[in-house]
Each structure stands twice: as structure tokens, then as C-alpha cells.
Image 1 (cartoon, rainbow, N blue to C red):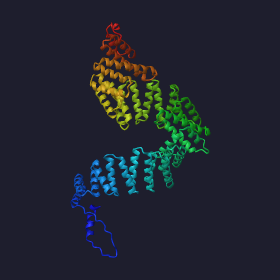
Image 2 (image 1 turned 90 degrees about the vertical axis):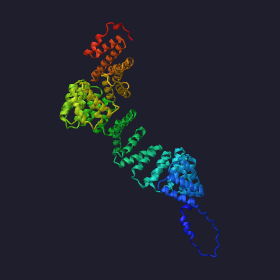
Image 3 (image 1 turned 135 degrees about the vertical axis):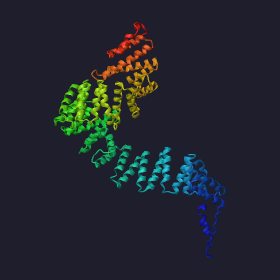
Image 4 (image 1 turned 45 degrees about the horizontal axis):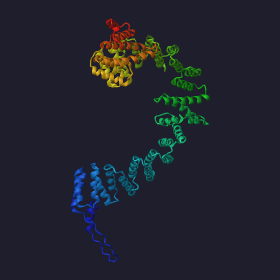
Length: 637
């Protein structure tokens, strides 16, 4: 190129060759000397480009090409600087001229390609440039990568696969390029080509677990489940059938394969069988059945786990760990009677506390509280605080007492546990909750306040402590402290619906910050739209805003929800008292709204119903007695 070899030409001009009369030389046409003005502007452009002054370089080059329109170097430099400042549309023409003047110059073709693809987005012309580059520089993978990207984007599968074939041919022994090609063959559904690459790589690296796993996935993609299974089994065997962070993906694939009955049957019917694989598969399936999966998937995993356990028990029917695992699985799948029977079989091989606990839990699942209580009380008498199952026994026994509304007995269990393990925040929290059930708010506050600092590192636990502390403070009349606690909770967890509703209702009760209260309660209802307490709160906010028709509409919905909940509730459940309290409040609110609307008969009915749920409420009784004696003759609507 003339402008990059000016100095060399000057040196050659001073040389004189020796005369050789015996040889006749053809005349060689001399190249036209570059225009000095073009050279000057070109050099200025180079200095500007080096200094990062792209716009100045562009100005100089535009002047230079006016003096010399035959230089590929000048047009290429102009296109390069225009591309650099993202003026791709303007770069197209100088890049095109550079390519026309010097068709074999690969850098200029790249400039032309980038201008085309980013300016007018002319992919057809861009592809022509890439193909030309691939011919001029056949060992350069970059052009083929760009072709692959364009063809993939345009959905031209055959062309994309051809580009990948070129990459593989050029790559030679480059493992990175081969992996890239194999992954993209899979994306293009050319699974056989991908499998071939992975297979060849494994020949030289037979212990490469990552490639072997990728090959297994490719086999699955090409519907060759048998080959995939063999790949995954080989990988797991090499890892001694362990379940680790590295092997979990392999186990997941095997679980999905064996979730299909015919594949599981084939595994279980193998002779000789792979006992270690089958044993660990059963354990993994149980974990999957207990994991965070859709209900149908969990049922499927549990079914397959039971199938594996039954297969193992056929040859070893007195195997205690297998019996225990099956009993737990039966309990998890809501078959308490079968679980209890299996736990008893396990105990015949040697009694264990965990199996007695399982039997008690099977009774709990059937709501046979007396039988569960009998077992748990015996276990609790014998248990020591350092025993492995002490915590579970204490929690289970206290919960059985609570389900029978025996709050004092539950409190005694938790108090004993707290005395034995004062550092155990879980026991202290549950002890505090027994005082909530008894509405002993002062004692609850004294137990909950120290728990705030002790649960700072456990967000879910801290949420529960703050909520119970906030409502306890409100009940003992410490309004401002309660507001501060709820506000802290909502900063930590803005989606805590109960806290949003409770704080909103507190404000509404006092007729304060009603707009804020309404927003808080609406946020709670957005999360739980059929919650009777939240519906009542919103109705009460409308009442305080003197919007009585809207208030009654929301209160009617709240009554329907809470009446249905009470109808469905276990009469012995501690939750019944809370439902009755809610209904008393909602009926009182509805009576107040009806009275404001002038419907005294309806107000009377609501007050009367409220008194059925809260007969000792003197304020409510006064409201009822103060209604006009002719309320019964008022509009019943």
C-alpha cells in the first residue's frame, strides 16, 4: 500500500542496477506517485487517530480521499474511524470502496462487514463478506463464528450446521472449539454430530466427567435413553454412588430416567443387580418426594421410591433401616395406618425412639390425639435434654396438647424444655405463644422482647417474633411501641400481609392516618384476598371515612368468609376462639354501619349475633339495648 511504504520507495529510488545486456526485460508500468497533499492529510489523520481524536481523523481522511480516490488504504482508514465512533451507516461506502480497490485485504472486508451488520443491517451482503473472509483466511475461526450466529438467528439450520462443520474442520485438536461446536450442534438438533465430538474427546480423556455428562444429555436429546443411562451410571459408579454437589445433576437425570416405569423395571430385573445403585436410588427418590416439586411430581417420586424399597425388602424383609424408610415414606404420603404397621415391623427388629415417634405421628395424622399423647408422654418421661430426639418429642407432645386445647399442659412442656435448654430460641418462642393463646399479653411481651436480638440472623423466625410482639404490645396499650415494631417488620418484609393488616387496623381503630391505613390493608388483601379479618379491616376503614355503603359491602364479605371458616373448624382447636372473637367484632362493625345507614333492624340483628360470640362484652350490650324500640319495624333491607 502506497501510504504505508513511502519511505521504502524513497530508498529504492536511489539504487542503480548493473547493466545486463544479455537479458531483455519487459517494461513494468510504474505506479502513480501518491499525491503529496493526500499524504499530508493521511499522516495528520494517523496522528489524530493515535491520540484518540477520531472526529479529527475522519475530517482529515475525507479531505485525503478528495486528492486520491484510488487508495484502498485511505478508504479503509476512513471506514475504520467511522466504525469506531459508531457511524456505521456512513462507514459502508468507504469500506465498500476499500474492498473494491483491494479485494484480498481481509481487514478491510471486516470493516465492511461490521458497517453492514450494524448500519443498514444488510445481513445478505454481510454474509457475502464473511464467506470471502473465510476463503481468504481459511484458518481463522472468527468468520465462521459470525456466520453461525447469523444463520442461527435467521433460523437457517442447514447453513448453521455447515458453519459448525467448518469450525470443527479448522479446530483440529482445540478442545475449546470442539466443545463450542458440540454445544451448538445440540442447539441445532444435530445430536449425532455432537455425540461424535464428545465421544472422540472421551477417547483421549476417559475420566472427564463434564464431557461424559454432556454426552449423556446429548443421548437423551436424541431419544437414546439406554445410552444416556449407561453414561450416567458410569459417572455415579466412579463417584462411589455418593450424592454431592458435583453428582447431584447426574442423580437428577437418573431419577427422571427411572421415573419411567419400564426403565425402573429393567434396572430392578438386572442379574446380577447393582445393589449399591438401587439402594442409593431409593434414598434419592425419597429426598425428591420431600423436595420442592409440583404435587404430581412428588407423588410420582414417592411411588417409585416405594417400588425400590419393596424390591429391596423382598430379598431382605427384616431389614430395619429399609422398614423405617418405607414407614416414613408412607407417613409422608398420607397413609398413616400403613405407616404405623410398618413402624411396628421395624420395632420388632429392635425398638427405637424414632419409630415410636413415627407411630405417634401416624396417630396425629389421624387426629387420634389420645393415642398420640399416650406414646409421647411416655417418650417425654424417658427423654433427657441431651438425647437426639428430645426436641422433637417435646414439640410433638406440646402440639398434641394444644390441639386438645390443653394450653397449660403444653406450657408446662415448653417451660421444662426452656429450663433444660435456655439457649433454644424455638422453645422460648413456643412458650411465649402459649401465653398468646391465653391472652396473657404482658407475659408474652416479657418473653418475646429478648427473642428479637436472638433471632436477628434468622429472617423468617424474626418476622414471627416481631409480629407476635407487635400485637402483644398493642393489646397491653403500648400503641406507639407496637406501631414501631410493625413498621420495622414491614421494612424487613414488605409482603407480610398480617403485619400490613394489623398496623392498618390499629390506625383505623383510632381514626388516625386513614389513607395510610387503607393502603396497608389493601396491600394485605392483594396478597390474601379472601381473608375475613383483612376484609373486616377494609370495611372498618371505609366506616371511619364515613363511606358506609362501601363499609357494609366489605363487612358482608368478611362475615361470609369467617362464618364458613368457623363452620369448618375443629371445635377443639384453639383457633375457634379466635374465629369467634373475629365474628363478634365484624358483627359489631356491621351493626355500627347499619345504624349509620339508618337501618336499625339490621343493626339490631348484627349486635345480637355479636353478643352470641362475646356475651360478656358490656359495650356491645349497651349498643344493643340503646337501639330504638321500634328497630324491628324499620326497613329490613
